[in-house]
Image (cartoon, rainbow, N blue to C red; front, side, top):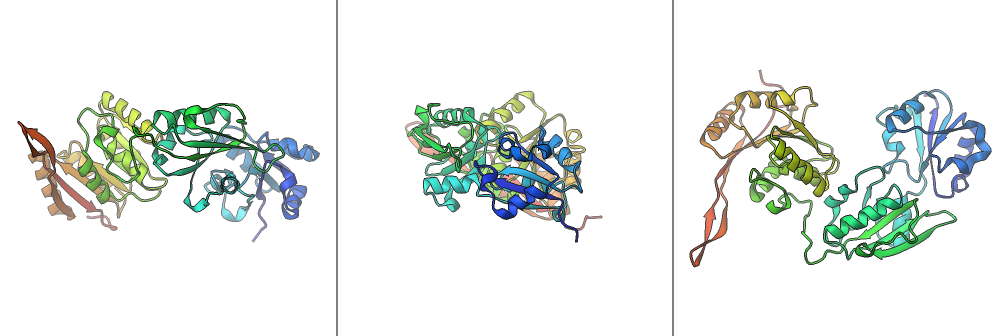
Length: 407
């Protein structure tokens, strides 16, 4: 086996001064040294080999691949496998072509400074990402370590926490950890100040909810009021049962067909790490609702496809699971979804009308699966008395597609 031509070397805020002799030897033998501008000034003695990495990410990948076969070192911050270039390269370069040499990650350094057990901390990155992703992690008692882009990100986080009802949350800004200018700034989110906040920082957040703060855990079954909707929404208890049958799994993809306000797709993404989802919706006003909900509930990466199904579903990657919440009786739509679903994938369909229910019974007879009727009653007033008033019953069919395609 040939030697790797590419080495990804993590450095701390001290730059190459933090490297062990083995990693420094890799720099000495490299023909090309690539890194971000903030790392390169610290290795000016290697000036004739320095290359600033390009932006955006796609251009940087092309840049790195152009050096294939040439001894190359990429200087990265901390542990390159934590939201870094090391993780990204695995999708573009064969494992035997490169090696990763991590330094202590910003998360490890921050947990050490805060004396927080790292295994109990939520570690996320809002570096170059919307701060809205924080929403899905904000619950009472949660501790969060967040990588940021710069000082402005800290202000955005403080504003988000305050608006969400978590203004009492303690924020600690850890600047230039491991470097000669390391410092800290502490404040409550509601009292945010730029004083003492540097551009190279990691933020530690100890979440404290105000009395008015909504409690929105990642467990499926958020209150209906957590969503902007026009009434076309899979209600809370039915939604929880639906997500249980869909079974969100890490990295898997859901199609939410006839998504309404996007509640099922949003809860799918909140329930499993790296889960992705696509909402298919034809009504413009409901698409606007989905856009608001994905931002407010911490899944800005939720995809939205507008148009008439099944035409709008064509040409997309096969999903691991499909939820049909609208136009359930449409046989052409079902046939397309069933054909698109991966072998072994799950499909769940909910019907509230007789024609929808009859369609599900027909599909049960043909494809198998399981069927249940979900009947929910809610407390209501009847004159001076209280009673449980029934909602419309929901007939739910769920089925796993056989591993071998049916003839």
